[in-house]
Length: 160
Image (cartoon, rainbow, N blue to C red; front, side):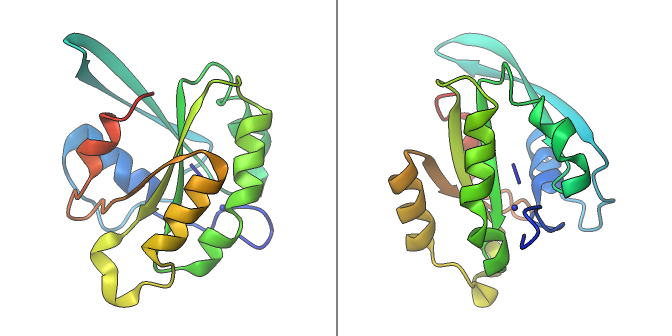
């Protein structure tokens, strides 16, 4: 879940807000910068079985990159998040995707998330661009809004 020109993701793409919306079903418009890693958990049902989903919200800044790489190991899935209103967050997805694939097991599912779909009037990245990037790299794609909760539940129903 990460991305900027110096290969680190600018703050504000909404990773922490997505986590809060998923685990607590609430939106917090002002959020402190994630330092290192924050954790969340929630019980979900998959194929009739109760599963505890543990979510790691990792910092995007370059200074935390070596720490966040260790969280790829053993993960069943990863969300690569960009802000649809900020082209710079989309432009470096390839770097972060390579990082995720290099430091994870080969069968980890990666989902591309275009966040802030509630800000359609400020959109800089077309939905079709996200879909094309996901298709090209074998990723699952979805647009979400942590603010309105649009598609946040649906993300957890994907095959991780």
